[in-house]
Amino acid sequence: MSRVVLAMSGGVDSSVAAHLLLRDGHEVIGVFMRHGEASAAACRIDSDEPQNANPLNLPVLGDSAGGKRADHKQGCCSATDAADARRVAMSMGIPFYSLDLQEDFRKIVDYFVDDYLAARTPNPCVKCNHWIKFGRLFDYADGVDAEFVATGHYARMVHSNGRSELHRGLDGHKDQSYALFGIEPARLPRMMLPVGDFTKPEIREMATSLGLGVSDKKDSQEICFVTQGHHSDFVKSRRPEMVGATAGEIVTTSGKVVGEHKGFEAFTIGQRKRLGVAMGEPHFVIRIEPDTRRVVIGRAEELLRPGLIADQCNWFVTSEELAGAQSVGIQIRYNGQPHPGRVEIDASDPTQMKVMFDEPQSAVAPGQAAVVYDGERVLGGGWITHALDHVATVPPIM
Image 1 (cartoon, rainbow, N blue to C red):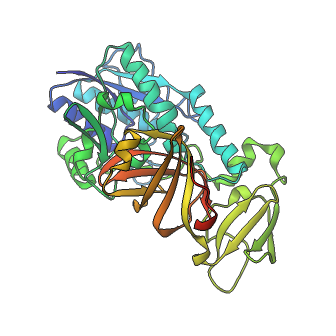
Image 2 (cartoon, rainbow, N blue to C red):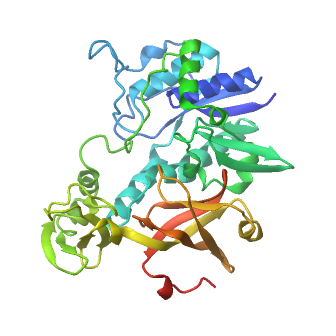
């Protein structure tokens, strides 16, 4: 069939993806993307070692806590992940290599820190897919004459009438299409997403039946490079000169000062906990003002916004196709759902868009992605620059 480069993370999804590709007759090359700063030595995999080398020459975090697997992260790649990926590849007879992305990944860390210090809420996992993972995977695939690149994302590629479309995964609870909106459109025909046609329980059951040893491995939930403490502590550790420089007042939407904070990078739009003030009723972060260093809080209804502006847009369709879409929905957070609305694209600059929701939406956070769907299909998306306060004061995009 075809030669496919598969990103193997050591998790259950990419492990089963390898099996599915082999089952369909493809030649698979496994690649572990090493991008951790804290655990580079632990994750070291020398590609010139013989393929039958002992997979446990990598330190494995096992045989502790009653023999249970140590699934916590020790950086952006753990010794457990690296060893699991190699072991699964060896069990299937797949050539396995390590791709060193540590230098590239520093760009993601800098983006994360800079966004918080600019009062935005970054999404490093989505940026990493766009900037690093797929770009470097395709570069590697070209270098080994592979026709396709595959990952374990829960999304689907639909190929029909000479077109390649990105769709939501079958498992609505695990769908990851939101994280893939920034892939270059020209690369869609070369993408494979083998697990997108299955539910997560089905994938775990398949891993168990295959004896892969990863069927009970936990999904990664945290920001991979913030391994302990609060994200604001990480930001301060990376920019020590900013300690104290972002401290300021906590005020209500009416302007009343109700407290002080040690740095606005500790807050995100919609946040309720850890506000540091007692108001007698639930209050949320309504907005963050980097110029005044104020964190503005208010009641839940004050979070509602009629729309948003986004830039750095990437589209899988033309403006005419977008205008003709029948069931447009806009998803504004990773674990959210698309909300019905309409999208306007700047005719002279399609990287800019304005979104107006059919119903006001809560906690529209600058820095997050706004991904546009037509039913199950991903049409494209962009990065939120700001939420719109009032419909009447919104200038049209020309």
